[in-house]
Length: 155
Image 1 (tube, rainbow, N blue to C red):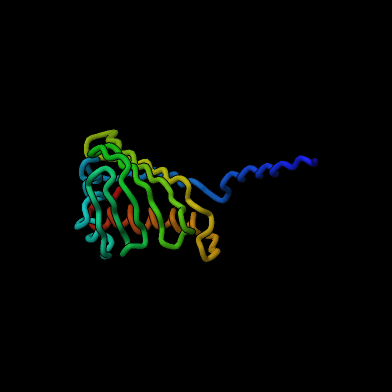
Image 2 (image 1 turned 30 degrees about the vertical axis):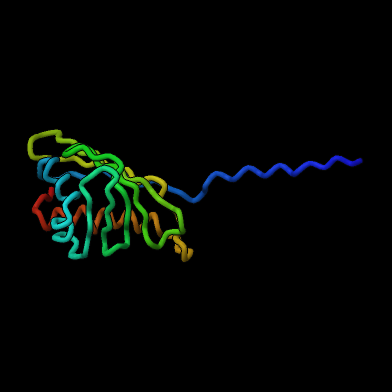
């Protein structure tokens, strides 16, 4: 009698096509004020002019840019840290990234924000290979620069 064995499944390849974005931005304000702006739906709407829904609770959900970006708060420390799971509507099913914003006040009235956005896919579900660049541009121009302009926190 011939003995047969099931073939060993191939190891799943490490997820390729993910990148990280890191940037450091300075603002003329207290860390607590900037934290509040990023966690307050009315202030988000002030600087984006777009519908937004934001929970201020850990495990609470958010939806920004009219639902184009959704996610969950993973860790919140007022004036110090925001960690969130982000998902863009144009990404493939199941793809999520992690945003980490660390707030520091090196001197009174000056806040430094260190952003790390990990697991950003290189392509969206439509095959567009500009996701990382567009995400980085969005952080700079649609969030950080608009906060400076609307709230007067420019440096």
